[in-house]
Structure formats: C-alpha cells, structure tokens
Image (tube, rainbow, N blue to C red):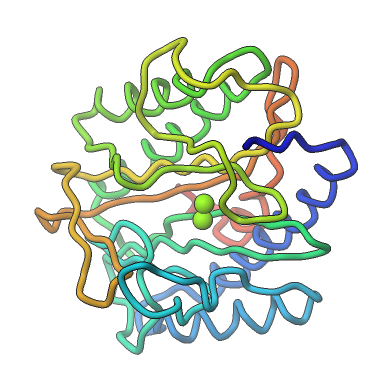
Length: 265
Ligand code: MG
Ligand code: MG
C-alpha cells in the first residue's frame, strides 16, 4: 500500500533526510587513504545520535545473515551495496559508496554517495559521474502523472548507453515512517509503464550501476553484495517527494560537495 504524505509530513521527512546529508558530509571530511570504514561508521553514528536521531540501518534484519551491525553501509570498489564497515584501511584509488539512514521525529532519511579515495582512475570517475547523472535523470521523472517505468527508463537508458550494467535485484523504494515502503522503484523499466506517480508519494531513487556485467553475488556475511566480475560499482541515492511538474529532493548532496570542493564528481 502506498501512503501519500501531507506537506507537513514531507517537511519532517526533509529534516531527517537533511541530517543524512550532513552526516555524509562528516564522513566526506574523513575519507582519505588510511581511514577505515569502521572509523567512518563510528563518526556517523555519533553525529546522528547527537542530533536526536536513530541510525536506521543498525540492527536491520536480513533473511540471509544476522542484523546489520553498522550505521553506514560502506561498499568498496567491486562491492555494490550493503558492505559492512570493517578495519581494512581505504587505499589510494579506491572508491567507497556510503549509504546512510536515519529516523528522526518518526520519519526516515535515506541517501547514498560514492566517494573517491585519493587519486581514482578516470574511467572509474566516469562511472561515478554517469551514475550520479542517472540519479538526477530519474528524479526529473518523479513528477505527478508520470509512471514508475519512466524513472527506471531514464536511469537504465542513460547507463546502458555507456555500456554500464544496471543492477536489477536491488531497487529504490517508498519511504516514510518506515525506511522501506511501497512501491518498489526499479532502476530499469519501460516508458509509460508501472504505477502512476502522485503528488505526495515519497520515494528513494538509488541507481546501482556496474562498470561491467550487471550480475551480482552475495558474500557469505549475508549482506555484502558485489559484482560477479569484480569490476567496480557506484551507488547514488536521493529521497524525493513527487510533485506537480517537479520533484522535491528531500535529501541533499550540498553539504557533501561543500566538503569535497573541486574534488566533487
Ligand atoms: Mg540507502
Ligand atoms: Mg534506499
């Protein structure tokens, strides 16, 4: 069942999502060769709790493994999503996708950004750039009267035109009191197909794009999803409210990009 949100509810969702953006900016300040993803996770959890919110990923149940142990999902290089923060230092040339979720005043925030660690190969930087472009092309279609397939089509066609893979097994989602609500929001689809979008629908759009084949495997930890061919993957996510003529982006990359400056993708 899809819950349409009132304007007041959308403002509460915005607050939770802006906190996610600010948390990711705190993480951005620390990303460099030598830092561990566990250290990023510790800083993120403290920042979220200091702002009176709860990290929603922590303790999230999985049908395949134990509850998720981190505040962040940190997915390095060939890891696509749901990487578990660990003690392995990031290296020059790595990329790390950082996904973060909060619960504040009863509403969820959910946003993700893929960061470069030091000097990253231009081909990989292009993967990040195209994935981020695809996210915004998807968002352009999150308007009243369009359909879910229009979002998926915009993302898929942009990425496949560059011969990248579009992950199918994991998708975006509705968001509100719960982190994962209806509908599912695939990153692939046919124009004009699927559920009609209505003002007040709030959805997380999150392309997961691979440099090579779109095939993925899950690691034995029951969480970490990586590419089967071990090529790199990128993940960008915004939470948006469907609007008349224009989507309202509730999360923000502005804080992150202030930190990154001219190193932004
Ligand atoms: Mg997320
Ligand atoms: Mg999400």
